[in-house]
Length: 112
Length: 114
Image (cartoon, rainbow over the protein chains, first blue to last red):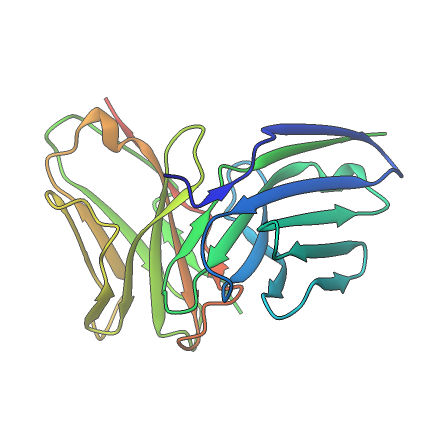
């Protein structure tokens, strides 16, 4: 049973517009969530995170929103740039855990 | 200031052979994690090690797979008698302490079993 779900395998956006990537989770309230970005033939790179005690975290063009009642988080990228084209993974770090639980990823394509 | 180094980048093995994947953590990092990514899947946790200790191996297959992180040298993920289903990208990550937030991944080893 998937604990972290990214239901959209792909997303296409025009340069300058907003990209919204979504993620649903099934575990407890006290988790910690991370977004990773991955280019082909490279390892995932940490992008931004959010603690379950917050509902928003912002870092430059990247903002993550957490809706605890819906067990849903989203990553907003604005404005989107062609260099943002990559696979984005949502990951869940459970409070007592040592492992990240990853979603299957969403491939973002930003066209110029 | 090198990041997490994995080698080889690509490894081809025939069925039944052994595969050894190496990971050198970032300088100052004493915690190592191995993940596997099968085609069209997300990364799946395999094992978490500290120097000379396996802390969590809940994601390791019960047979043929082993991992170590010796006092000196890199962490090794060893797969004995490889099968085609072992073909995947294997990623190593390291962190400086027990906080796993945003730990750093290597570029991975792509294992192909023919």
